Image 1 (tube, helix red, strand yellow):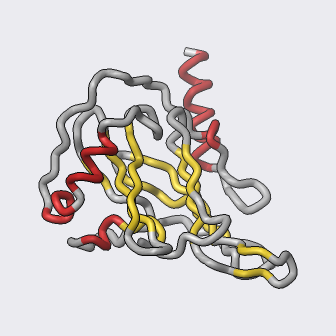
Image 2: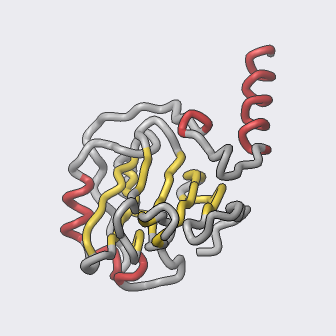
Length: 183
């Protein structure tokens, strides 16, 4: 009973957490309990946009999990500064959109991860966590003399991403926090 109470309190603390630029989400706040290593399930490419990128998705599905226990985040290019990606459930073969993609898109733009991959723009995620940090865009700072991309913090829940925090790279003022993913 004490263990159950401790788990409930921990979950409540994580979900009630208010994040900001000085206190961003951490990977250890969103652990994955399950480890997985069997061969991947066959890919389920059911839409035209999934079949359009069959080669990229098939190649990514051959790799070991790199996100949230049994998922592989696979990347491919979509232009000189653009990156596309998909989240592949290696356990089931299902394919999901990356967090910044247009949710109702039906073609190649369904998979755009970041339309502006400039210096310092990268993603960060771990196999033992459901947190994904996405840095994207060009916001050149005269004061700091470097690019400061916008930064999003997402958590993977029930086969989709939920935005936890957005930090704009456009200004040195306090970051904006959002509660839901507008994408």
